[in-house]
Length: 372
Image (cartoon, rainbow, N blue to C red; front, top):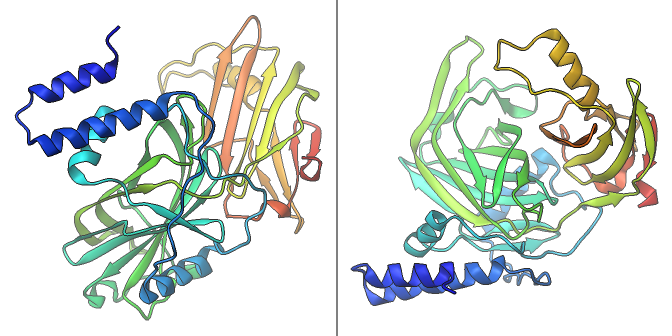
């Protein structure tokens, strides 16, 4: 039987391309097919530390501003995600545009090597990435050749700026998600800003995102001033890609407990926490109808949805603070025979150490993290 790889190979032979380019393309597709086959996780080889001194100083400011230098708790092995067949367009991009930058590990944090792009006198560099199976945080530096571009910025607490730009990061094999983006100036005395993206995503095969390729693009960097105006700090074309290589901080908690929500029986199927977020899966003996288009949703329909999706989820930390994860970055529900299976995932409003998470309360069931 003819495989998709054979078809690709035949198509490539018919193109008028240099032999060397065709060979690289076919080899990339062979490797993609290999990675799509179920296999034991393979260890990712890390590169020796090669940070130039200037880059290390820049990352130090990023870490100080976000506390990414925390000794991240939890644990797991770093492995390439198996069973992921990349988009053919992405494969072609990697062949002709160069492979994604490798990401080395340093103190459990991933540091992309050479993941940088310059346009119109502004250089964007991916400095670090941390995360878990389905959530990640990426820190970037944005360096201006002309320091005057940053004069007169209206900074808020912690050097934050009201960001309204259009920086996007897409990870291969994901199909959506949500999170936040923050822009700040860790050192007003230099010519560099810091951008952080914290996102939770869903994948096609629930295999996790460690080992996949991340693709960043930005065409404009804007802020919203206190005077109610948009201010463009930079416009250009920034594109870079790198490996999502970091230590997975996911900790799976005991599940199988029973509770109730608004009179319906609930079974807790899975709970996981990490340095970035919490995920809860449960089955409830209730169904909800499909919602109408925006603007046509009745109060009754919203109440039905809340009766299925609104099961409270509260994360408690060692310092006594809590995080309400009831309303999530991303959630989904599948209807069964009189039941709904719900998956709720959200990122915290900060990066934490897993060892500082005391418990997760789902409905009225408190699950200690120490019991994992």
